[in-house]
Image (cartoon, rainbow, N blue to C red):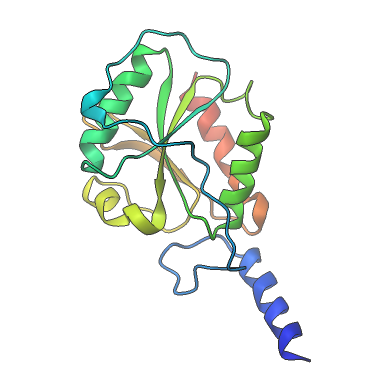
Length: 180
């Protein structure tokens, strides 16, 4: 087998496994797409909660890097509640195939009706691990979702542990339950 053939087999093997942020090999194809997030919002201290109704599609907010996770989560939870939404802490990674597939599904609008009342506060597993752990959010695999309690710590959580790019679908039942 050529070195190119071995490399391809290795990449396919990596994709078949659930995404583990503590893995030493984080880049599958070297390209990686952006995590399932949108442009960052202003600092939590500068954003006033609004009472606007839900927009009919999931909202994705990038976790700003200028505060600790617990403070940010508490602030965004109150903002989401004022909008009639449920805040979900979402952790992904650019190298994770299930995370990239979930991003594509969210971007395509195919999950709009199903997740219309959710605001995802998106963290990057590679950049935000320390501050998430300090806030009580621990996980072995991404994508990871958590429902924060009033004080900001996780009340419930779910991580994708299945194999392959469709592992993100394991999170849907939990997301459905949280927005009811």
